[in-house]
Length: 102
Figure 1 (cartoon, helix red, strand yellow):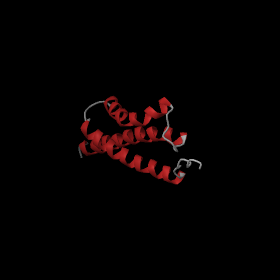
Figure 2 (cartoon, one colour):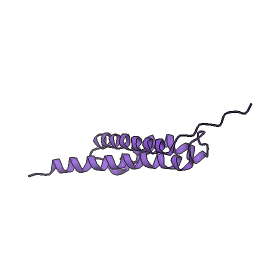
Figure 3 (spheres, one colour):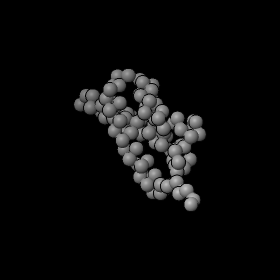
Figure 4 (cartoon, helix red, strand yellow):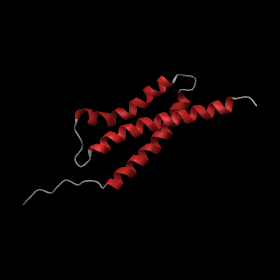
């Protein structure tokens, strides 16, 4: 009796998971933008690093969960980091537009 091969998620599923992560990261960026209004973008960058660290650790250690391809491991922290920064920039632009007179 041979052991069963590990299940590998379909690439379409991994892309869908990245899309969900991106939407959630933009929403988190909007919240981070609200919390850090009046502070530098450096503060926002630090807040963006914190949630993406859980995705960066497997890439740095080289310990991928069984079945996850390398491209997904690298793309996930990048998507999270960029999504949070984009959400924050969007919030900053919106708050700057609302605060302009006239």
